[in-house]
Every structure is written in structure tokens, then in C-alpha cells.
Image (cartoon, rainbow, N blue to C red; front, side, top):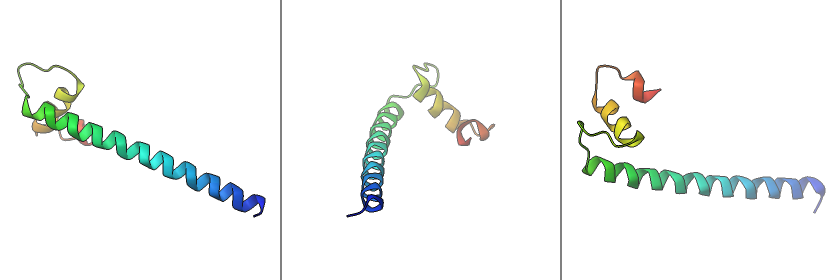
Length: 67
């Protein structure tokens, strides 16, 4: 196995680890956002996730949540 092959294997392993970490964060955020949606009160914004939900429901300025 040459140096090029070793480098490619290392890069692929790093990509797999990063992809797995990103998926874990996505799952966590999905669960957290769902929990917040279930208890959402537009008159009592508790944190950034509530602010995101409020902005996403406010159709007057779609750029605020679509970036």
C-alpha cells in the first residue's frame, strides 16, 4: 500500500466520522425542535429555537428563516 493509498484511506475515514457527527447533530436538533413545537407559546419565547419557530410561522418575512 503506497503513501497515496494511505492518505486516501485516512481522508475517507475522516469524512465518514464527520458525516456521522453531522447526522447525530441533525437528529438531536430534530428531536429538540419537535419538543419545542409541542410546547410552543408565541407569547413566551424561551430561547433561540422558539424564536426560530415563531419566525418560521410568521410569513411576512420569509428570509428571516430561510437564509
